[in-house]
Image (cartoon, rainbow, N blue to C red; front, side):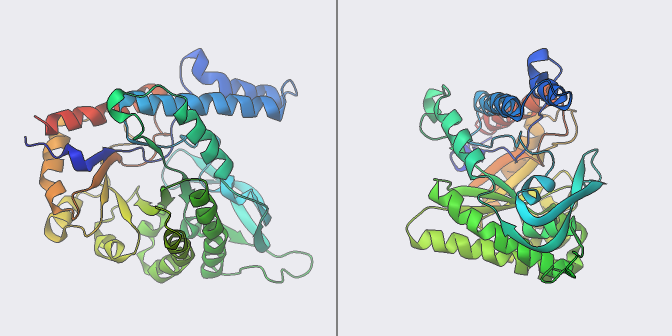
Length: 355
């Protein structure tokens, strides 16, 4: 195979297992259980989260990734972690997160949501500092990057409810569209704050749109404040790209419309989209794609040579000769052993491409 790796970067897709089989990988679980018994404090939980986060970042670096995340170790789930940091939102009972075994607490709007402060800036700053203290391969020194992740406004809204307060719920976003727009306006300042702290790529997760293509107008409208925040940052000569990721369902029917969005990078789940190869071959892409070729929900290992051949076909259809390779979704659905094996597969795919 001819080499295409100079324009192909290895990237995490977000989450990483918080608990493993080995005793040292059960630290966070033990501390949280001790907190519930009154034997530990929230400060102890924070220390454990920091330790596990450092481990998640170290695993990604050891695997040879170029773009890493903090593993979202602090996130109880992709919905309530952000919503819980807002005023006028109450967390209700658990609901399934798509067709995974994961559940999330459902946010209830009791008024117009308000920011109390930054949402993930502190986590990003911690991860960036942790990355800077890790030994890195000589050929990647100074080239590794941390990518913060945010659940997108439409997906947040889709998992949220509107309620009423004692004063009649004045100002409470009552419709899906109103909730999505409210979340978009909440997330836009976070884009600016992350950019100010040095983030040059921010991942926006919007898996819910794939199951609800009829709500495209709402999805697109809610995304606009984030794009405007990116444009504002770029006008001040800051480098910033928004990477929109969709997964869990077939994105082939929406592929053309996704390409038309003014996001900088599009992350797509090839595992759930059997016809996507043909779509990419036929239409190409005017922007970098993040190829979600490695199954993030199945511990069975793929053959590196097979995925290398798939990439060999698809990469020339991407304009600009830049793309990213990673799992189809976050790896929190796997064991820590399987997650490490999935990351270790990525450089083997590159080796196959390089012949």
